[in-house]
Length: 142
Image 1: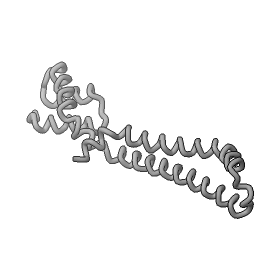
Image 2 (image 1 turned 180 degrees about the horizontal axis):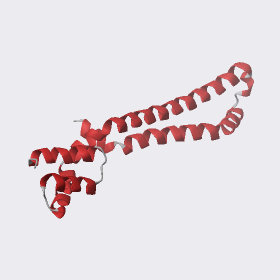
Image 3 (image 1 turned 120 degrees about the vertical axis):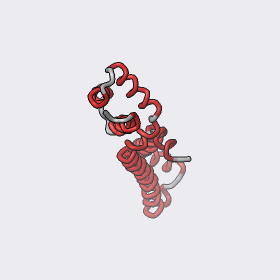
Image 4 (image 1 turned 180 degrees about the vertical axis):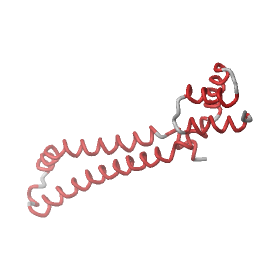
């Protein structure tokens, strides 16, 4: 028989490892002799009380994925801006007479679909990374 504090820590560590609550409850029953319904209720209670701690223990892999996604989105935004500057610079240096208002609008129309797609995808990746990790960020930031 283990003491309550050791079992409490066991529940937290198992939940942080994404173990099923029913498996944890079974282990609690075996270790302590507690009834199933009591063990199950205790696991749920600990999960609610220690939600912040459990998220913190799960967070290293999630943070790495979020950072990579955010940086990938930023790279796509930079690529879209770079392509825009490159195309305008090309027309400005090779055919300066073509940079009338009408030609600039035609240039934008020809390149807009890929630039809008790249920019939209990059922005969605950045915002999705921040939104999906809001609970984890709130746990780590003061």
